[in-house]
Image 1 (spheres, rainbow, N blue to C red):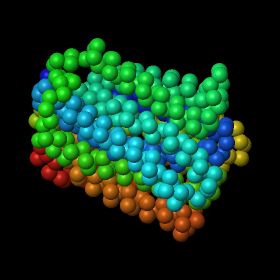
Image 2 (cartoon, helix red, strand yellow; image 1 turned 90 degrees about the vertical axis):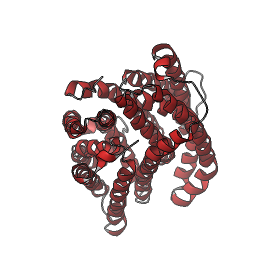
Image 3 (cartoon, rainbow, N blue to C red; image 1 turned 120 degrees about the horizontal axis):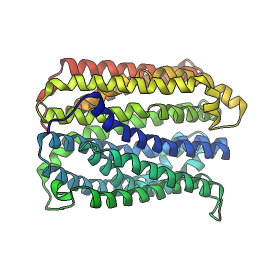
Length: 443
């Protein structure tokens, strides 16, 4: 059946991902809000620890994105039986990767953070968080694979429901474990980590039960677990490895950004953690529509409909832009109210407000940049996408260094680097799609 690429079809794929991402960000918002009421140190430590955790997990996320592209291509070709085989092989790989990542977090997180975090209080709190959160990686990896499967086959409703379920579980355990309510132990920042792990376990079980009961397992030949096909692994790694590196580097740069901000002071770090949480929430439609574009680009290429690639990307850009514009319009009416969700301190709200205005502008550029970039990945040329991202990140970190270390800029000035990042990413991706020979990619 021909892949539908009209606005309605793009929205149909995107809105459950948006719903799921909103739920995911409610988790982050809740963590930040609860920890912000706990202490400024806990708030800053949560920023460092969470970004360090996700920088490591981005290796698995990148592999999942590669699997999503391959599955979408098989669907576009009408080769549904290879979908299950791809899923099963990816599951083996991700389980092994999860064990490796847990070992790395347990053994290497202490010396790495000790060497780069200036404040002893923030280091101690960060390690308390990571020592518990690391054990959730294995469940997170399984959940990432299910996410890749459902986006790849363009059946995304389950992603929305599963993440809403995850948010409910996480918010409940956040509250009772951070503050010690309803007979649960008072664990502080450790409670936020434990709550996240519990939520990952619940969602993994939810995905497994739903898939076995609702998905035509025989059609896709899921869970066959036949002998290893090394040629399939070669294809998966070819597509996924650049995305693993790309996503790891992207989050690592975000981590480095916060380390540089931490050296400006705990107040600047607390402000940036609040802004990060709001910023990420406003970016939900951007990443969700970009995931839809990624899948649709891969599917139409699988059908041989190369002429549909750019039209579907630009349709997705329009939907993404107007969604973000609506969010900016809502938040700009009363930014103090938005910031007060995270802190009651009047001076902190006042200092965070100008930074939030800076971020509002940047979020309107990202719908163009991120959708174009995911369009590049959707073609299957993930190595070239990685090179584009690396070039952007090097320039971005250079700009951050200059503003913080050389020019001693204010925290508002430091956040203007987001404009540079989005602009460079969007321009380089557009030039690639317009002039490069991406039609020859074979995955």
